[in-house]
Length: 158
Image (tube, rainbow, N blue to C red; front, side):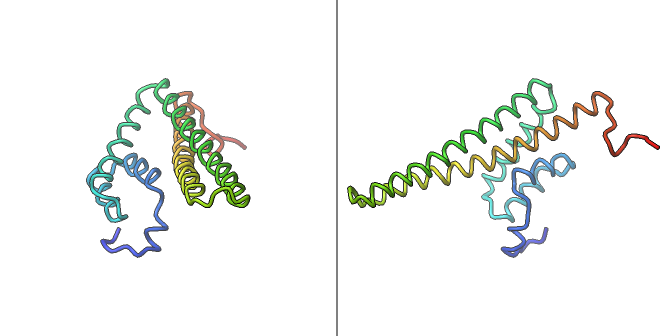
């Protein structure tokens, strides 16, 4: 990556939750990944923490089937909790709007707190979905490799 990325280039880059595991799988040194994240406006501490967390998760993922299952379950749980928070935030905003329309209260809290829950829920849902999808795909690939399955693209046929 260039040192000076335009906003369009930063937007076009993969999400860090996908970028970091892929870079680690390709054998890219952690320091280079941190430098790439810093170019994407991550603070050095946040970039180091993200790379360390993903490296630890990947280590656990490779250790055993139980660890893979646990990571997949954690990602699914994160997705579901985020979904509940987002939907709950929407419901609370709707109720707040109804209360505001009735005239019982005109406080911004009726919208700010539920909106916070909604945004927080969307973030958790997005992160959980990406992790869940990625770990399931990797686990499926590892199971195929272990079982000796060739997959449709590698199978010999007439």
